[in-house]
Amino acid sequence: MAEKSQPSANYSTWPVILALSIVSAPLVLMYAYLFIDTITDTAAGSLIPDSFTLRHWRFLWETPAGKPNIWLVTLNTLIFATSVTTVIVLVSSMAGYVLSRLNVPGRGFFLAGVMVLHAFPSVTLIIAIFIVLQMIGLYNSLIGVILVKAAIDLPLGIWLMKGFYDTVPWEIEMAGVVDGASRFRVWRSLVLPQVRPGIMAVGLFSFLTAWSEFILPQVLAPGSKVQVLSVYLSALIADDNNFDFGTFKAVGVFYIIPVLIVYALFHKYLMNIYGGGSKG
Amino acid sequence: MRILLDNFSKSFGATKVIENMTFEVGHGEMLALLGPSGCGKSTTLFAICGIHRPTGGRILFGDRDVTDLPSQARNIGVVFQSYALYPHMTVAENIGFPLKVKGMATADIGKEVDRISGLVHIGNLLGRRPAELSGGQQQRVALARALVRKPDVLLLDEPLANLDAKLRLEMRSEIRRIQRETGITAILVTHDQVEAMSMCDRIAIMKEGEIVQIATPAEMYSDPRTAFVAGFLGNPPITFLRGVMANGAFVIPDSEIRVPLPASVSAPEGAKLMLGVRPEHFTPTGDISAPGNVTFAETQGRENLYDVQLNGGSLLRSIQPVRHDVNIGDAVTWAIDSKNALVFDDDGRRL
Image 1 (cartoon, rainbow over the protein chains, first blue to last red):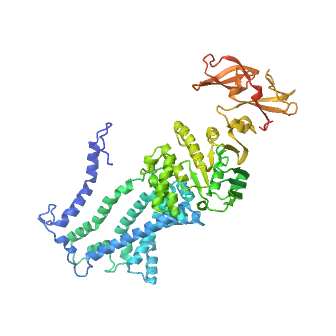
Image 2: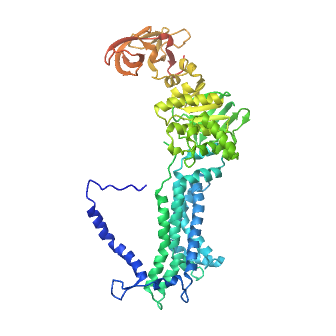
Image 3: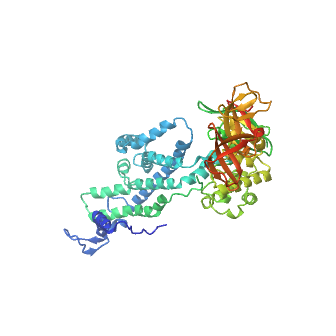
């Protein structure tokens, strides 16, 4: 798959690489120090670490007083992100199809409405959502914040999926219908496989944004039983009494590892455009 | 199974595509719906397969009224122009899909798929995916999928349009052979008169949502009802001379050409007429000489094709066995075979 890139004959590449390296050096250095600082101790004012230590990673096996257990928090984050992803993938794969293909009443209105909702900054809704959740008893619960996050991200997912469905040729559906399949069967076993890259993309985006979501869990589910990693992390730095920069960085690294894993596993699905069978 | 369209009409919103069309396809017959693009032939096909609901009239398969039945309940096989194979399934899964939908047992599906893939000669490709097939092979898969559940009717929507010239010839006879072997009633939609003439028992030629003429290919070629039909059939196409009726003959004003017409042609003196002359009826052996200059010459290997500008400006086309003595610009005196010339009135109606 990965073709070896040939050096271009038109111009030499090393000045470009040099320029890009200089520009990105601060970022690379910062990431490097993010990791180095978690396993070393450095004397104040120095840049060179002087001793190796694992004490910044203590949070993994001991729970500090007044803080929730890290594994509970991780589990919460995982539940939160996967649930949001599931809801978004399920709903947008169906809603996108309906908006793309079916002649439902009010289709234009829905399309415009979804677009407006997508453009709406979610922060402006947060007080209203807070009140609603409290009234229906979902405040400080994972379900509540999952529903809110999924609802806010759904418009983008629906639009993306509609775009993918729009590229599926009508003939495939016609062929399915004359082959005797019901419309649902056509969607399920003929059309859905054609939009797999779309589902992968929407799922990946949903998971990553849910994983890094901060403001909604912070406001709607701050309790220690339902805390997610982003809230945990911010509580860590907000705690002036036990300020520990090393631990903060270690939690940060811990927090981004799953993101890196997910990306490493799934990014090829984004590139891999499914090969179509019909010519012309 | 016979297909009957009875006063079939279809409009999209305010646009009337087809109005009160009636025709019948006999059991085991293959009929071509032939016409230029936009004449409503595909609309008719989609109405027969149930994708478009007719706005008026009835559609009958045998004696069963299927007008209000959805596609799924009609038992039809359709081959689409793009083949519409399911890209994520293998050839065997593609062909077996209609049976799987029916709920047939896997073993029986396998048997049926083997039988039908033998018929269309793709038995060795069953494990491949559509993307790994050539155009002709995809076409065969589409045909097999359309035939596998033994439909009452086979509908072909420009099935050869995406094939190259050589494959087109091959698939033309293949489709006809398979249609004959299965004895299935078939409708072929095409804009290619050669396909229609070579593959079908009868041709229904359509123009602007109406059927102009239904006849066998030979009848339609020798006895077209209108100038449109005469112009659509035949390759190279027919050419028309414009003239008037004078003393029982077709005369081009300001020219010595005078073609006596049979008594059966009745037109008032001085009426404007069109004389259709097929290229094979304008040769050195005809009976009405028409001198002119060669303006275009093309060799097709076995035959040569010439355009001749007559004195007076009209153009006639001639097809003759290969000869090397005529070049562009030469003056020739070839002649029209008056017995085979077709006479039309000014509106294109045959006289």
